[in-house]
Length: 352
Image 1 (cartoon, rainbow, N blue to C red):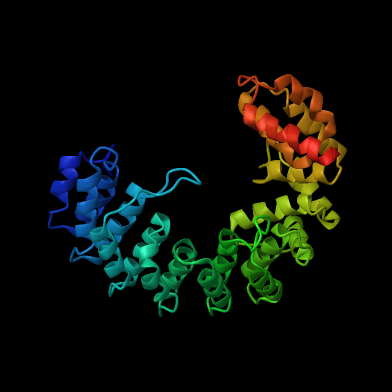
Image 2 (image 1 turned 135 degrees about the vertical axis):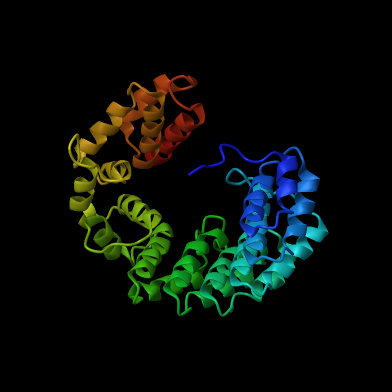
């Protein structure tokens, strides 16, 4: 089947937003977002106007295109500022009659961090449609005051839908705790502890991860069960986090599972998706083979592998790596200089 090789030109996207076929307008809205860098104001005005298109699929596509066009491109980067008419159009879309439009408008408002839409987002935390509540739980902590966000997440951990309980736990770390070094607020940590016995495994695992990242071992047995293959989660990010936390928390019950993940597989069998994380975790647990592997990777042929090894040293705190790191210092051809400095600082902190 024929597929478009590249996005429409700016003029073509504007033209096709007037096409009679909704599927053409959906594609045109997506393509219009790619022109935001050079045609910022007309792209914003057009997409805001498209939020009132007669077809729900087009309205949803316009909301998503606004997030794509003006949301942050890198972690920590602030989103672009939008004009008041765009705020008004997104607020109206949050209350759209079509659930898919409400959901995409909430996703856009959260991505764009539009605090002026906080009240509208709050109104959808109890939406009758779970997919809308799901997006509201993601968006609200990004647009609301901290206290209100925490209260909303605590309430969402009691939702009937396990995916919403899960995402509420995942969002807990975005809100943080009272102190700068607190990963999660105490009220959410207590809810996480209660959810270790949730009927849904995906929620149990997320709760164990939240607690583990806060330095608590309440969910250590669950994390070990994930690594050892005793239980499974549908969330790949959670599986990776479980592997990492078993190393950070020094969970010895996970050693067999970590060894299997780290060193099984080869030419004829598939290597575990999280083999790298498993090797780092084993090194944190003092496994000599994993430590030797990290040290050998510091002199690997490719820069990418050497950079990953530097990150592994920073996580596993391997004193034997210091001479190799010192030789890399200030040489961007060998590894990322900032990563090398970070790894050396980690070794210094561990020594102190």
